[in-house]
Image (cartoon, rainbow, N blue to C red; front, side, top):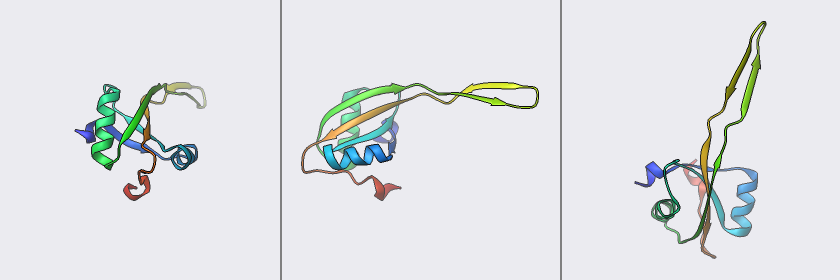
Length: 98
């Protein structure tokens, strides 16, 4: 079940800093999942206690490409992102799964 909800962890410089300072970790999740499902999936997958979940839908960006006589418009895919706060003293090792 957790494999269908959690798509991938978000490993960026900003999320790494939040993980070290505030015990917050980011995940790309399924669009249909809710906060309770995300909490259960993270607790099952990483064996930690989740104290909070914040979600947001990140819209796709406009990508315009120019060719000789054509202008091609397109968008990147939108996705749902979850910021998960973990209990103080616990941590998630995201680098072991990469």
